[in-house]
Image 1: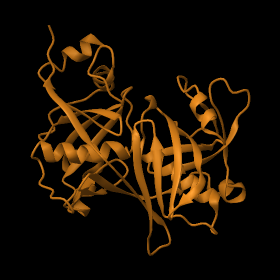
Image 2 (image 1 turned 180 degrees about the horizontal axis):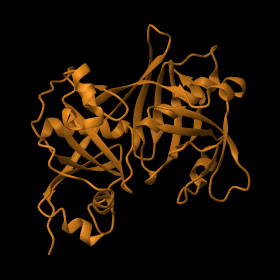
Image 3 (image 1 turned 135 degrees about the vertical axis):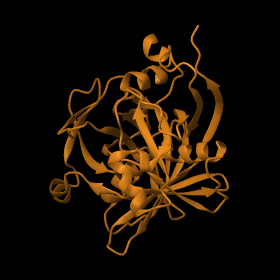
Length: 309
């Protein structure tokens, strides 16, 4: 771990969070930094490194060979969010991370984005549109989908999840937000609070590259003044339990909305997580799919240069 940090001596970084989901951010406009998995794990280590749920590198989209086509198709997507989980593994998307990423670009003076304006961001889950709000950012994460659509359409459930300490698995719905999620509904807040997420929940069947797991309690009543509400905890693959997960909040709202059925279509949601609260909105596309828009704050808390004694 120490050796990996030694290799990064002199690296400039920022630290920030979005509803408690925290990240180390690095500006690499010339694509000069080669981040290995061990570098990321060392930076994200909460005891021997800087600490974080992940590491985000800002690099030109054109410099990321396998995703350079994104900027060719959408020239405004100049910046690419190179996101890694805390264990160094690569992740497709992070809804909280992309909001913080845009805030970082603004603070680094790499982009100029007035309130009300939008920015295209390249990512491993496609180009995402982020809008600057008065009190944060809103990102259009694109359509949500069912991972096991045939089973889900038959039963509204498609897998089993067993949290640490549970004797039996509970039914779950597998949702993709560009990255995978398994959503489990719980009946009471007490059950949610008692969850032991220090160990990764077992998921069957589990997607090839693992999955995030959300445990959600719908509000009672579910809808108030036209807005649905749920409370959630999440175990993120490659990280562990986090205070917030943006794509997970979207997946949780999508699952509860799906379970509610066509007779109760709720387009606007509030999702309560340990790190605060985010908004999730569903907006219909011409092809019948629903784009999912995640909104919430983003904060930088410090900057520094990595040094070794």
